[in-house]
Length: 94
Image (tube, rainbow, N blue to C red; front, side):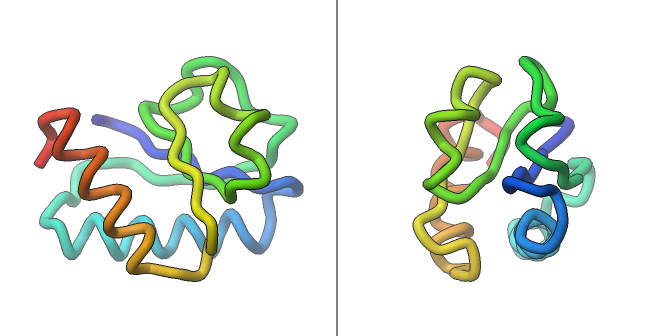
């Protein structure tokens, strides 16, 4: 796992918030060698990252680009940590 990309519709506020939360969760999990960035939906492409994190409203648009975690509430760090922990465990990263 090298790169996680957080994506929202415009690539500004909400994806940046999710990026900060992803970085916090990774730090809590003891993973500090994974790059995290944010962008907009229009800039997504296959292979943009090892994992895409987005709101559930964008999941159908982004799942074709790679592994995607959809968040029901992008502000909920507990949901993010639970889903990321499960994903990273399944991938053998944790």
